[in-house]
Length: 113
Length: 112
Image (cartoon, rainbow over all chains, first blue to last red; front, side, top):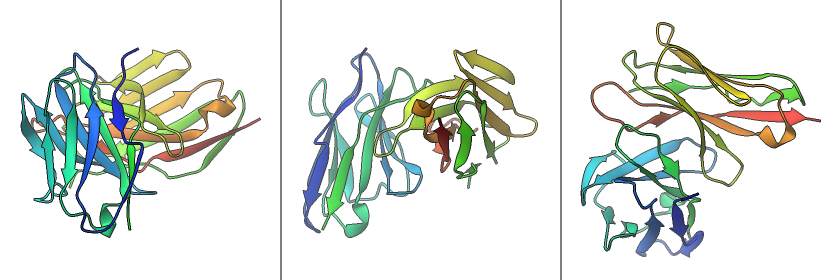
């Protein structure tokens, strides 16, 4: 069964450093998403992406964040200058269409020291 | 602010019993309703979705939607210890966005 994959599974970085989190969505899906979940808290939406552009973003997704689809398979989330409060699980998800159910990848645990 | 509320639990049920998980939402025009299961340290896994009032059954799982009362529930029949997890309710809003708002989740413990 096709699934969303994410790398790395765990990323440790120093405050102020840039990180790139990578995702490979399910191949026939057109909509891609990033969410984060701080330990013990809700899953929070960051951004959605369709047709090579951002379709929606939340208040969390400020200028420190960017997304890109550099090739036909990868979907990346970049955090330019990490802060301690960016420590969280970051989940990538994809869906066939915008109003279809979303399937989540296994997540990347980001730890900012 | 569109809210999705769940009792954090834990809800503890014996093996073989029916577990009932509830979720209320504030946006009366909400369109789609999802239940995800999340094991500790893992990602959300879609269990069921429901769009229309009434019941929808899939194996041991039944989702129930009551738009007039703004609640959605998940019943798990013949609960197994492997069902022990946090169950997340997610609701898409009115107004054209299909981005779901997640509840905090209810922790379910099924004891042998």
